[in-house]
Length: 306
Ligand code: RIB
Ligand code: CA
Image (cartoon, rainbow, N blue to C red):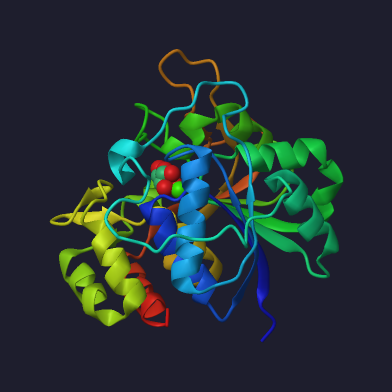
């Protein structure tokens, strides 16, 4: 079977680690490039974490560093959720920089997309700064992008601001550029991310499942995206789940705008389900997820990470 070429833009990030594992071991996906972006923690740390994960997974995928700050706003991190390093809880071996490209993420993405015979799917699971820069610096690249399947946004309330989800909250200007780009977008936001849970019994299975499961279980003990008791939120895995098992989701085609000026609502994704704004649809928004199907899919996918 022809593997689907993808680029993952990421800010690892404990939930990013789960998404990266599933994507890298999947028989259906060809991860051509991993690009890093400031988000959960600073750019150097998220890049170091990506390299640590690739060494642990024994996967040789090139890594390119992207933006060290949002387009306009001051950086806000999520070290309260992922720990100071961005990936607390497991003693990884020191990675080398063999996989780290000299090229910056924008140029690396442009090259990989341009050179690909098939259209490439972009999978941003962090703030959208790199993707916005790519689309602005090299607009011609849009014709070889299949779609952008992103973790971010929310139809309702936020998890970093009252109305803003973290990835959009950190760089709303970048998000507006991406949603206005005309590239087909799938938005996997909090409406599914908050329901995509690893329950205590799932994490216990992971601990003895294989080396990847053991490592993730160790990280989960330090992850503050939910709780071991009520369930840990696998936000970023929703983007990968959409690629591999879209029937898990209920979706709607609609218009999504990004609030930039609200003194209390900047970073909110305005999902215009009723068409009040009379704007053309620009995204497929995931409204719901089959929670049991997600749990089974996640465990099954991680069982293949050997
Ligand atoms: O709101 C959840 C998102 O913020 C996820 O991508 C998580 O890794 C954090 O970056
Ligand atoms: Ca992330």
